[in-house]
Image 1: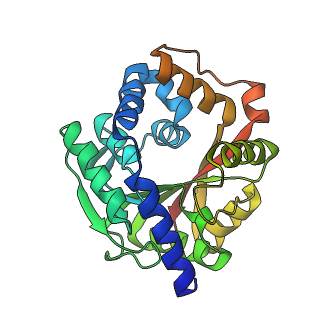
Image 2: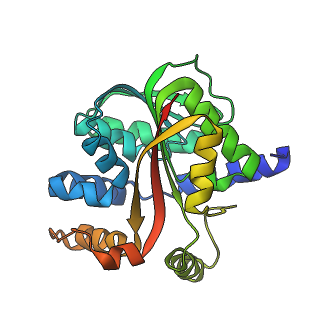
Image 3: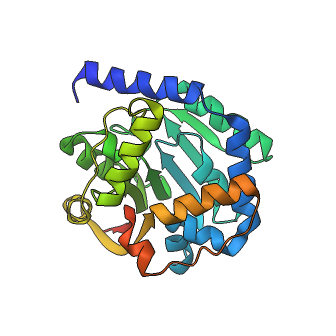
Length: 249
């Protein structure tokens, strides 16, 4: 990725996380922990870990953002030790604040997803969500290869190019008077699978996130109500993200 493009993206995320509503984020975490079994419908990456019976000693979240994924992993006992890596100081500061709020421990690292500062096979699992779509094709591949290098299992959630994704993106762009997440290129299911295969990963499982579940979750947080999150055919029609679990050969 050209240097100036990389710096522009970094500034985008610094600005975004500096404006993050911490109390709203806490409400979302509290609600997630409250709905318990239904949390797996909202977090498909977590459901994949559950149904594959993966209990992790060490986990690295690459492009950790607010750290919500890693915090959920810790609170639910899926990971004993978590590392959070991001190149944004603002996001790491937010993640530190969040972990302190819930009295959980983590190791926070300021680093580059394209060159992870860890030795080979340092972790049982690497996870990322909302990361690779912000890079060009060459660097998408590089990130997955780096995740595979430092871990045994690789879990990735990324948006896929579907009508629900583009409708949601258009509505957000209108509401925010511009797309707030910088460069973002959704993938296709076959593209993400191809990246995994080229990286030398055996695909073990996959799942999806959808707009309907996201809307219901947001409404539930706002109203404090437990809702029925069980997915059906309509959820499948409204898919906007894909989750893939791979095992290093």
